[in-house]
Length: 357
Image 1 (tube, helix red, strand yellow):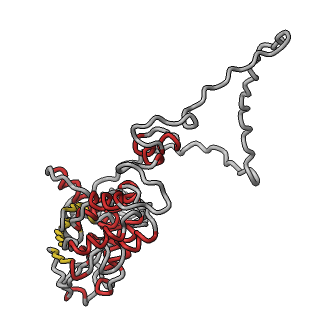
Image 2 (cartoon, one colour):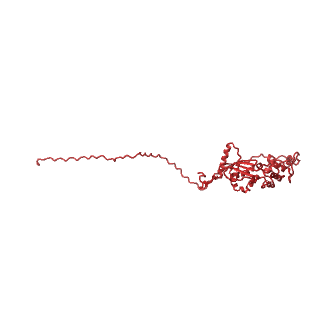
Image 3 (cartoon, one colour):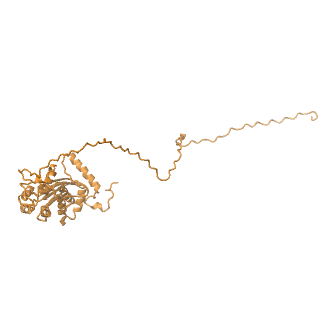
């Protein structure tokens, strides 16, 4: 019996359909995604690994930013449940716009517009981060100082948008400013920033090259200045997959490394004195053959096994005579034939005598 057939008597007056369970939402989203991909559409779904939506600095900062505004508090819990059900089957980020498709009771299209960062604010962010960012890899991986984090996430002055800078539009019948489908897309952006943090700068219309150039031109406090935009030895090892000596990487470009930085040749091993000792040939250790495990003794008393009884032989039953159709005929009772009684002999006539005559 379908779960939609057992409805309360007051639910027939509701404008919206009955809500689905998490398993039903996951199945509907996977079915719709497969149907769209079969038609040739290129989708970029939001798939979470477990229950956590965001795990890196940029993703957590985005989710914390949207949760700090009380205008969104009523819709965000439903949005979290939708994004954890993989209902966001497509999410595309462009400069100043986000377009997504969310599977609810049907497929809904969501468009979110975000204003680009003002030039004055971007200049202030660049000035505040001057000399405090080592490289682009450190910036995108979130390995930045607490002061830079505070500049990036400062409400009204950082890189994250304010509610007045965000516009929503969804094709669902909900008349609220932010519906649960829009909230799911907002959390989907935070999950996407875990793997691609450069999308935040693309969304806000900011160029990371300007930020890195400003940071490189400014004198770094507590560290020796290097020529150009050099990467740290650990970052080069992560990027190119090689091991680089710290002293060799610290040498200026165009100069030969010092003797201390050059690798030293290994010293030749000394020859032992006297006659060499006789070494017995190495005998391989015996291979231990695992013994077969002993069969386990059944616990408790042994069960009584009933003697095998042969199955009863089926004797074909005699066919039941068919009942004649219609009314039974009336049969006259059998009358015994009359018994022939022998007639009594006639009495003899007495003879006449002379005396009587």
